[in-house]
Image: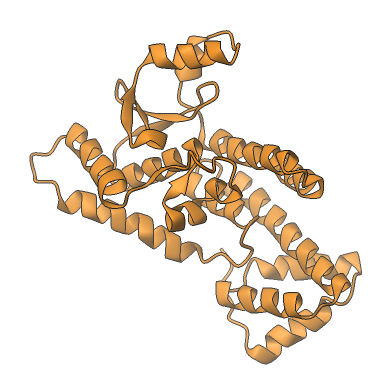
Length: 273
């Protein structure tokens, strides 16, 4: 893992000056450096680029940060392919290139700690799941964003942790990541038209406050979407497929909003996962 570098203000200005060079080899070298820079340094670069009013410079920064993200995704696929948290934070960089991953991992840590502190020595895994529900949905008040379902912020782990509103897959992911910290096996289930989680022999719906959901309800939803039901829809899916589904959602939303350039850009990222 690269050592995180903190740039001085003069170094940030130097980095931004180099962004004026559109040579692909220069941008490639800068993209490689981006992955090793601290969130604060990246935020400063982003601000300087935005304030420059230099379209070529801003375009080069965009391409360098995107290329860096592609490099990081390739590393994730090769080294951490089953690490859901790392994968989702990489997706977050589509929205926030200067993401401070540690800040948001600490939030997930705090939720797990509160769950653990609420349990006694005799607690079962079922008790733990009930406690996760209590912390996430009663205390923190996470909920599905039904009124603005296609808000792009519903699709990124860090923004959902900030707003407490999300889509089915991201709320399920938060549940899974908290459960993982407590050594409780919770799996993602990519049912047709919806994303839920499985714990033991129970299906839970984090979009609706972690309520229990039956197979019959999943079958009915599939029928409503004219999808022929197969029991394999309720089989756990691998982390890489969860991340890929998140990115597909982004592509669909950008197309829905007629942001075709962004849709094409994110589609290129999807090919790497």
